[in-house]
Length: 225
Image 1 (cartoon, rainbow, N blue to C red):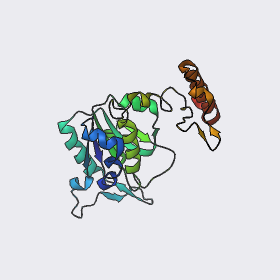
Image 2: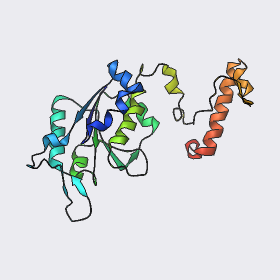
Image 3: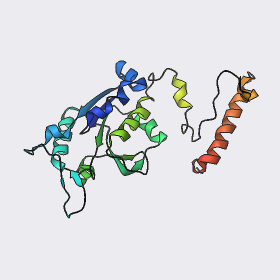
Image 4: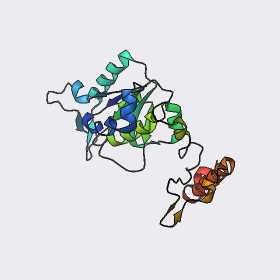
């Protein structure tokens, strides 16, 4: 998988992508990530990439020309399965979408700033508009880091135990059950006896019941389907 990230601040990804699962996936060549700054494509003599909105109003907007030139350049050499724009008014990212995206070979992720990007980019290039929640960030970079982490960890071999990702919350439309580790008795706080019984069938049933109960309590709408 290859991910091209369009951003005014590529340095923001250094920390999140230099540790843990993403770092290992890059080192193993399971995924490659490249950064592209719209400032490198602006024709403005002052190197500007933003301007005032037509019609007035507070806040600046990322200009259509630098983004269009950048995207055109990328699309000359690759066919993209998705061109994603991170925006608070996009569809909320869910696990089932990530499970579909994992089959994609090439992805572009556009990060907006200020009041966002010129609508013509959204109309002419963007195939998916994505949000990580109903709140506003200073830019799309943090949301993109979240998206990339959630996606890359699903690549077979990216995490040590491949079965682990299949038992995460949301994979089967349920929240994950409680988990425990040694010691079995700490300060009198004891692990449920069923988990130390060795009865795998009973343990699986207990975990399923716990998942259903937690989902009913915390996210009941997940069970409506």
